[in-house]
Image (cartoon, one colour):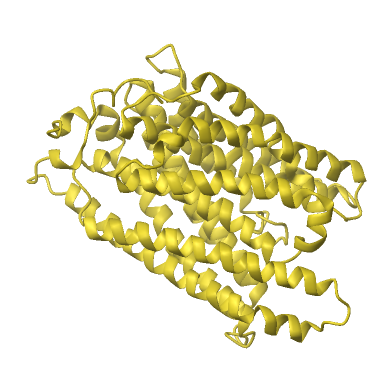
Length: 473
């Protein structure tokens, strides 16, 4: 099939939203690289505690908090919002509006993240998971997020098509739900803090909600858009998609109690979370059935989405298994927890977003990616790095969990027995960092080519099956 003309793919949404969306994406990729550097330092410190021990900024606790913050609020927020706005504009059928608000919001969001990282580095962290930034930074972030989200809300309200699609549902849900859980967590943990064990409950609720009600929907919005567009086929079992959507929204944050198993909280909280994790498997099953067309299809974007989909579904299954008290007795408070987190955030969310970026950027710039070799290199290194990281941390955590239950095994013995797997985790972090550097170089190169008006739009960059523009997502 001969490629379709580029102007059949570059729409008014792409031309009007080009620079605001590219600003979000370049900010995201820079934070991704920085978080990779910090993650590599934290991994080295697990096997070599003296590494940077004399530098107070890079003590292990602070390094982990810096890594988490840069990844979630730097990479995840910027990239997820860029894809959500682009998807809402594309499926809404009208150019994005209020983009000046989005630019201002992007600037202030990233300045807030930078200030938050400085606060963590200087010892002003809150100590709450996924909310490590000083509390004086977080209200500014909430306002900046609202400014960015205005464009998405207007795209949703001003859409020209009466029918809506799963990609839009997940994107809009993420836009609206994050301010709610973020502000509720700030009030209950910092400004009008609840007392006693309720703080742990509120912290667990936010940490789980940030994944199930914000990041996961952003990744799924990209996946639900890219898969039918690239394959040119409508989604099977699409009638079940609304049920899976509401299943995630209703049950997602309830599963946060699985982190509190065995803690000083009412037993029903953990029991409710165990049941919710099991019921949530329906959501993962429907998502897999609907998007299974990504498996076996060609193209880097679809391969990354397929990898992310597999990791997302596997992560849901692992969450359900490890929520049971007998399993949690071994896995809780070990490297297995970190492996689950990496499987969800890097394997699930990030891979789906990578796939959406590789699909969206040529349409935003009107040019193919500057280097196909860098695209393939990044995809290969990302998939290899995530696989090695999750496997190594899982094995290390399983060994650690069993030996912690044996009073005869010393901590020195545990460190010795897990050292090889932690070394493998260090190597995996280095591979991921190298891959992300390739993405940064390729993205900046491609964006610079878009600034050159002398170059015509590259029609070879696009493959447009007959049904690609059908409302299949």
